[in-house]
Length: 214
Image (cartoon, rainbow, N blue to C red; front, top):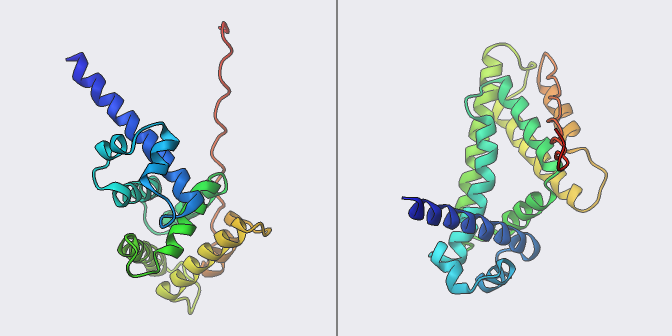
């Protein structure tokens, strides 16, 4: 029994290594200019070895990388509603600040995917629609509880929020002095009757225990 479990664990670890390599290659070169062989070299494998784990080739790798990134954000928002969703959006923005590579990857691929023939075109279109619907629903819940300022339309406010977030990320990647968390926080508070508290930053990871320490 130990053998199969060990093989499964090694396979899962290998898939994770391949995805990390694909992430780095896509972030650096974009989808169109990258190749499975480049990803294979980055992880010290043959192209055949990579395709053993991702039989759909570069498209399968692209989808797996995107889904992995989105799963982390969706886990953070799971079970939330109303104002709690808005707080979750701020928490996601805070994680972006320390994940420049992820933001760069997303921005490069989102731009490429505006081409209807790009393999990620439908993925991004559905992703934007899914996010817009979720944020609109959260703002509508806040509005139903009397929490939005007079004249704020949940759908229009959502479109403005998405445009702000996407634009800030692009400016930040290009070296401009923007506040990914603070600027989104300030915009959200222009919509709300009661200001939203800025969430505390996550605790810093604990320092490793020195060898021989009690």
